[in-house]
Structures are given as C-alpha cells and as structure tokens.
Image (cartoon, rainbow, N blue to C red):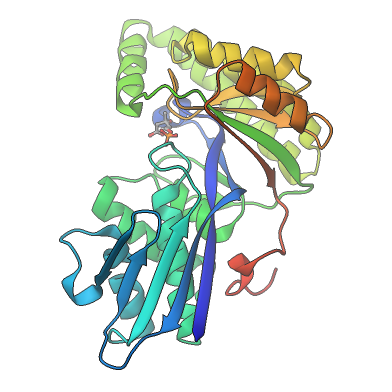
Length: 324
Ligand code: PMV
C-alpha cells in the first residue's frame, strides 16, 4: 500500500554565475521538466526501512546503509525531524535530473525523499523546514554549499542570492519556457572559478566592471520575472553571455549552441553555471521551443530539456506546501 509520495524539481542558474563569487547577486529558478520522485509503501513486519534507488539499481536497509550514503543521510535527518524510529517502510527513489551537471540533482533527491516520508507520517513539512533539512545533507556532501539549490528546490520558486545573505525567494509574475542544452563537455566549476580569480588578480578594475555589469543584469532580470515580463529576459541573457565570454569562461561549443538557439528564434541565450562546458540555456516560446531544441541538437548538444518555469499546481510537489 502506498503511504506517501514526494517530488522535487531541478534547478538552473539563470543569471549571475561567477560574479556571485565576488558579492554580486545571482538568480536561480526551478525546472519542473526534470524531477526527483520518492514513494513510501508499507513493508513486511520487521523489514525495517528499505531504500531502493531505482536509477542506481541499488537496494539496502537503512540499518545497513553504505557508509556516507546520501539517501540514507536524507532519511535519517527526515526521520529525526518527524520524530520517527525507522518504520517498516519501503522507500523508492527515482530521478530524471541529470547528475553532476549543475541541475541540483542531489538536493532534489533529498527533498523528494523528505516530502515522501513526511507525507507517509501524515505530517507537514513547510518549505523553510524542508530547505533547512536538505541544506544539512548538502553540507555533508558538498562541503560549503551556497544554499541556492536547497532553497530553489524546496520552495519551487526563483531565488535571488547574494553570498553571505539568506537566499530570497520571489514569485514569478508570468511563466516562461527555457531550453536547457548540455554541451556534453565535462568542465570543473572550480577550474573556471580559479581562472576568473587569476584574471581578477591581474586586472582587478576590468573584472570588477564585468561583475558590476552582471549585477545590474541580475537586478533587471529579477524585476522582469517578478512583474510578469519574461520577454525582457532574452536581451538580458544575451548581455550576460557576452560578459561571461569576456571573462573567459565560455568556449567555442557553448558559443555555437548560443548562436544556434538565437538563429532558431530563441529570445536570448547564455551559458549557465561554471562554463567552458556543461549547460547553456535559451529563452523559448511554445512556438520556438521545437525549432530551437532541434537547432541545439544539430549544433552538438547531447541533451536538450525544454521546461516551463513558474507553472505551479501540478503533481505532488505541492502536497506539503500550503498557501499556494
Ligand atoms: O557549477 P554550477 O552550475 O553549480 O554553478 C557554479 C556557479 C559559479 O558561480 C560559477 C560558482 C559558484 O560557486 O557560485
């Protein structure tokens, strides 16, 4: 018998990557086309809590979880918060969020698990509480997480983030669509972050100006999203991309994807995340989504996700989030 279910979306950085390391703001948004799902069923008496990670073909009891397993960590934290000893439950977890690609897969899996367990226990997990619990798992596995992923994913809202300050959730005035394309090139964020630091040390004035310009773009984008004018995001994405190119964190393949998206009718496009590989994003409409996705694949994207941003009210994501 199914006792509870939970879902959580992925996330993508919309504006402000790299400059955010230097105190400027950044924006990240939830993406609902990819999601983590968890389900709790009743288990056999005495079975304990069984965790089954479907994508990894991995199944174990909580009592015998591998050392340092992040799913078990999420379960332990949730059970402690809910005031439960491990019940005889079977928890299954499945995610369509690509892993290790800046789309928030780890935080989403934790959030889905916690929502499913709370649902099964007949308890409510408010977004703030869920965000804090997911952050605890992130701290265990990512050292010093910024707090963006857990906030975006737990609230299912855009987040405005300034380093050293609590992330601020804000509403989306009107939904919009993004195409997210993976360049297929592996790139370590810490390498591009290190190179930007070298550039900044050599030419502080030039880099400070780039960061300031990006900061202004982020402010304009936040206003456009909140006031329901997403069309204004396209030119802002183009401008942000050019500044990232000047910063030296793009690469020919990302530039090719950005150009292909624009030629196929996207309102604007930019790299997203660390750069020199990884993902890019393009602003699309219902009409341009298909042609843009096709153009991105032709230009070498290994995966294209077209996703609405800001369409709420579907699926179990909302189960424990009253007031929406
Ligand atoms: O690698 P991602 O997609 O999680 O994004 C990194 C964002 C940077 O601003 C480049 C680095 C950071 O720590 O904020």
